[in-house]
Image (tube, rainbow, N blue to C red; front, side, top):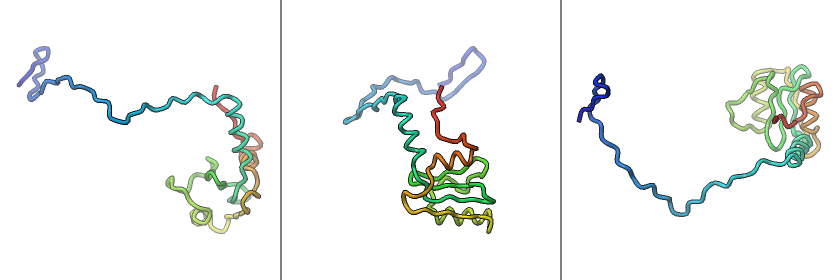
Amino acid sequence: MTMAFDGRIAISGLVPLTPTKIVKPENFSPPEIVAEPSQAEIDAQIRRQNAEPTTAVFRVNGQIVAAMRNSGTFFPSSAGAVTDGRALDANALEAALRQRHGNALRVERYPAGTGPAFGAILAEVYGGKGYLVDTRA
């Protein structure tokens, strides 16, 4: 079949579309719509994150280049990430940072629950202004 549009373009091989019936799969349940958290919930989450103790702090020339806590790893934007997105344990992260910084790297490790609070790490990195805050307008 050849069809011409506006007498200028000819397209060959078109197959007309026919309507089909949309079938709802068995056991289908639509995704739950979750309401936005309340301001009290946001504030509580920020307090929990700021209070979480770090397990390791990595410094170069006194500046924090990474910090680990149970919920993840923090890299200041000025330090640049050293991973390709994979999660690293403290030993693997130390090895990656040592490749980049050599003997200038200093590692502070803390037993569970005894390290500085994550909010204090952010405050040190960002000059006292680094605490997690709700930035939504």
